[in-house]
Length: 251
Image (cartoon, rainbow, N blue to C red; front, side, top):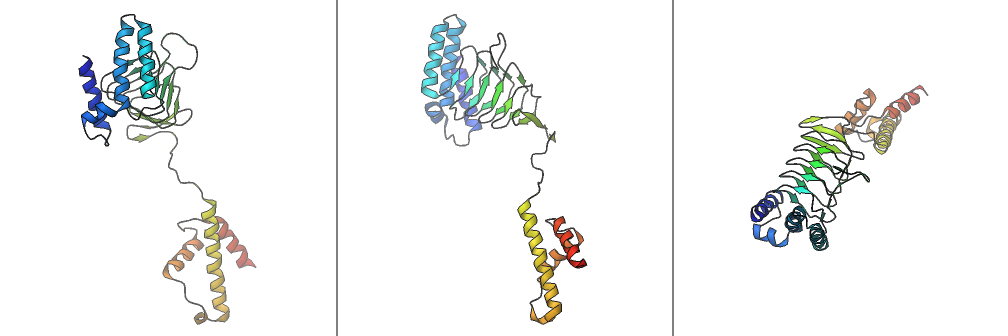
């Protein structure tokens, strides 16, 4: 049973880490695989009521790997802890097969509750670096938790959550809530746009005064930009520039 689970853990590392060159290298050097092996031993002794010995083993594993897993935590075969430093998994936590946990993650509690007080993470989930999943909540199968997120409520299956506190931004292929990639106004771009339009207008006025041949003609790109700016349809919209131009025309 132990070697079967070890094989599943090594296969998970090979499947999820493109830097892994061989299973032998994984077995020899991957701290996440080592921590899970120590945990399997600690969990065995915890189950047969040798709890002190189990805790000693878990603390030894923490010392050597930087990963702390309570002996009572239930971790399915085929879980991959990538990099691993700073990972903490609490006593009543459960992690499903195929889940990937990155460095700095916590599957912890929210206080001094008793009973089921740590999260249950489903199969094939991704818990990104620095994420905190707290309390007796459930993270559904195939869900993704963004880096640095703090999750305090249940996460639906196939959902992606980000932020503090975490919120759902995607379920499957559909976006939910706030669009993280929405275009925002850039004040510097607006100012540059306004200055460019004023330069173009000044050149046009100067051309009228001293003659068309005295000043080089605008390039096609500049003419297109000025034309679109006058119509209010330039790629970088400058409503302030348009209003300034109108005031100058009146003067």
